[in-house]
Length: 339
Ligand code: ADE
Ligand code: ZN
Ligand code: ZN
Image 1 (tube, protein in one colour):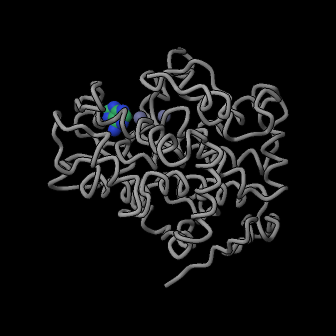
Image 2 (image 1 turned 90 degrees about the vertical axis):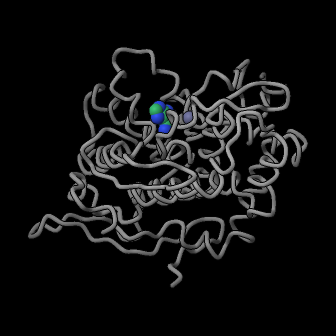
Image 3 (image 1 turned 30 degrees about the horizontal axis):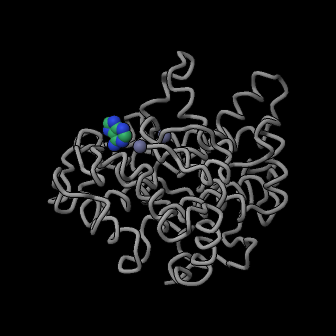
């Protein structure tokens, strides 16, 4: 399936087939980056622009799809299994089990790893071109994995995350995975927003400030202890208290039982009632909401790294950093924990 011409123009994409992408498709990743960009503080945006190659114009949305474009390169072969997380015993829709341990290489580990690198480079600025390039990679992977971890099928291993689950889409054959990577988003933009991704984006930001606001104010709060256990990254990322990829993956894994795999039938046309259910008002515009969550969380973490409310100054005695829990974000959303 080709993207329509207006989508291509608006998202600055060219001749891309959503059948050939992994993780959220290019469209999904672009949107998560666009949401995040709107919630960056000016100082964070400035530093992000400095880290990224000029090619990206300082835009997270342009950098976000990159990890899917380098999958064939030997240098980055290690990264391919970091786009998702599969936990043993998980079998949606009957039982969604997310019994996670940190021994593997997956998107939860990947997010901790990349955040840790970004923090290290914030404390000790890279001086060589090699280190600067490693830092840019870490940022591109971070942004991308933040998108992937919010795609529910990237948090369940059943049928290779639904890649092997055949499904009908109109008269075409596809897979449950491809449907969630891109086809739902694309059709939602087409049906409700006259094929205009900018209108979809504006609506998403508007919904975050209004309809989803009660829960949105909690999206960036989590219980870091729930990410502990045998977490080898807990020491190096403890300053970033909003970083909870294990909790997010568990949240997404639950959706595999409540929505994604429910009544799975390879003969069902997923562009009908199923599409209406997961994109419509009945379920609070779930597909759109996941993109918004990813972007808002991404921005909050980047703001925490690059523009903390109280500057992180080294305490020479304890070698620790001061931190504060509440961050004011642009767009008049104050992320205050609600009990
Ligand atoms: N390959 C194996 N499991 C996968 C998943 N959950 N998502 C994407 N690709 C996968
Ligand atoms: Zn991916
Ligand atoms: Zn995918």
